[in-house]
Image (cartoon, each protein chain N blue to C red):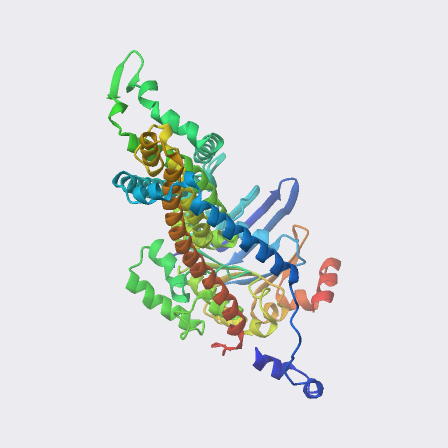
Length: 257
Length: 313
């Protein structure tokens, strides 16, 4: 993998508003290559919106957001920024995998078809090549017996693991997880976290919006606490979780831990 | 499900079950006297109507049977079926195009589609057909050119278009406006997360429409489209406005103009329309059942799935 920049993700004073409502009020943070960062905070704090800005599912209104040194959503023309064409934005998203809270698997396609669709259509991989790779990835997430199952025939945990395999099939340099276990029955959370833990060990750069503090403490390299559109506190997970400095962090952690 | 209940259920539940009565219920079924009475009245009324109809002179069943398989009538049936088929195929394709345009992020495409639907849905199909019939009078020829520079191309005469083609154009453009709204409803029924997931995989708008959104929308689109086919079969009787006079309805009108017996020939036309709408209704029934079955099955299997082993666990 070629490295264009010191950091995988650089957010510089990122602002985002929906109409008059400002959701992100200047987010500045860096994610190193291979780093696993957990974003935590109360709902409505802007953490999911920030994650969606990183792959341009939401358009940033202010500041700069760079992935691997490349400005997201805009082309820097010196003094002015130029909005990217839809096709150029699609090109940027190829290298950024995303896993959604509600899985968003394609219900009319089998598990394997879900995984190979984008490699074949977007990356123009040959069908046979994509299928070999797709089967490998499904095996990696523990679903080697479910190639031909439709999403409706899979449990939530299995669906989310297919979704992870689907994102990995595009060989992303960065994986974004938007509350990947929040829609799961409690007994199914573990199997998804296991896959994510293994992925983190393999050196993937990951940004995870989550309420799973145990996972954050164990797997994350850094933990960022957001509230009301700003980063309140960040640092090593153990430090932030055990010794929070800010009252808002303390109040939040006292409720979730 | 039963496994889960047994495992989860506390032990006192089973004691509760054993204390309950186990014999089969033999209750007297609820009576529906009014329902039966109304049915009897309707039955008597129908029989007397049919008896009366079979004897009423103006219905002239002899003429009816004489013309039911008349050559001109059968030709009219073919023309009506052809008009329906061509107009619907074009309308469905155009409707998908218009619906996709309306959903597109491009404001030009959006406005064009909106204007098309506004016009063709907002004026009566009969009036539109009269206009198509007048096309060659209104526009004897069409010339493309730049003022003060010269003509680029001329379409010499729209007269060359046959009345049948004009009828197909008129019917399909009108129907396309309705099909567009049906397709749009189908597209809107697909969860927004699907488009986002496709986007996140680097798919462009066109690709995600073609491969992800439209295949899922088809389940919603197909039942009302069957309805539109039935509606189209009957709407073809309006092509007399063009005037195309060889369809089923006009064939029977022409015959009655010479026989002075309009009623039996109206019955001939009605009979044929009913035969084909009935065939279409049966087809639609099976089509709907098939698509509904997919959904029902899914619901059951979603519940069953969590009980299976978790591969990674």
